[in-house]
Image 1 (cartoon, helix red, strand yellow):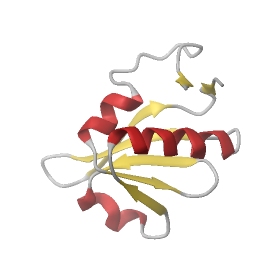
Image 2 (cartoon, one colour; image 1 turned 180 degrees about the horizontal axis):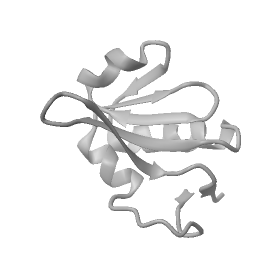
Image 3 (cartoon, helix red, strand yellow; image 1 turned 90 degrees about the vertical axis):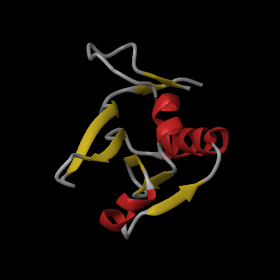
Length: 99
């Protein structure tokens, strides 16, 4: 389970809430995990992608999180009204992962 409580940061949404709003996850194989929709995949062509149910994706995120280096983070990718890419932190670098 991903725990943000040890950080002094206000999170507007949990990982599971963002998963409900997205359809795709991407992982760089080291520490970058992104949650997005299909239209955003074009910016992450060298990443490993997973699509599927929220439960399945949460399990995969936890696996990626556990094998990531200490620089790990999770960001939500969206676009603004001008189609510019936007990044929202869901789990910042230094967030812990509990067994």
